[in-house]
Image (cartoon, rainbow, N blue to C red; front, top):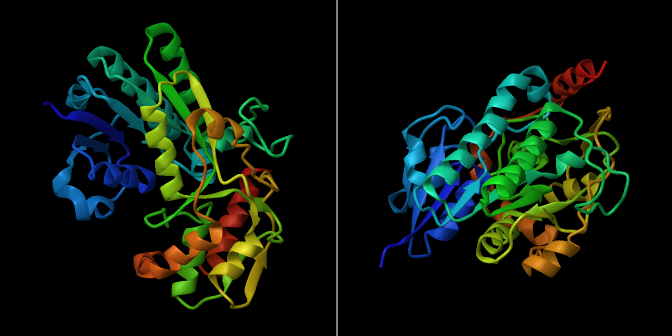
Length: 329
């Protein structure tokens, strides 16, 4: 019997590589498409013999489209992330996040892919008016990154309506885990903290640290993607978070007992991200299982992963924060 085909765009990235690894335990054909702009081959190194890796630029037409022929499911995660870089290079973000999504949808349409599950972003809510925030709350993208992720979601459902491509969108909150990106001082707080912990440096906290974030562990996120592909649901949006936000101070104390350094708060950032996951629980049959305390312990147990991460000190964080302020003047 012919194997089912799974395509993962951005499959060498943080979340994509974990989805790929999950499927190596199944009898399926796994195709990874990635341009390696943020993804890394090291992320798929231990199971590379079980996947087909194609380096390609999804924002351009190419032979990569042929791999979509009769794909059972397309997980679309390829995109550029981060806020300040998106302000500096909005066209690059539009090309990577929006144009690529259109090309992926056209490949799905041409080659009759069975379903697409899109990795959307909770950043589309901007500074939310309601907590917890549900899928029907106001959309207010604050930066080009958030806008391009939301535009891609809108395009996804337009293609779903016009061309009948079965589609599901998962709005991800603060995903963390092994392999998460460590190359940005504008986000990826776990990467910043763990790089500093490994270097035996004090953790740098932007703002008071009382701001809350909805951290959700990578294993739980992968479960959500798999369920979204298996369930007979179409045209739906789901928040994927823990539903239990924690303060940055609390996170910092879980990671390190050393003194902390506080830097000025960055304007334009929400004081809280808090996912209402009622819909995901009811329709997807999904709920997070890993508590933040247990997830952080898993990262500490795998701390050697962070050994090559850039070491951010107070000066580097200050510089990044200053740049943030400059863009908001």
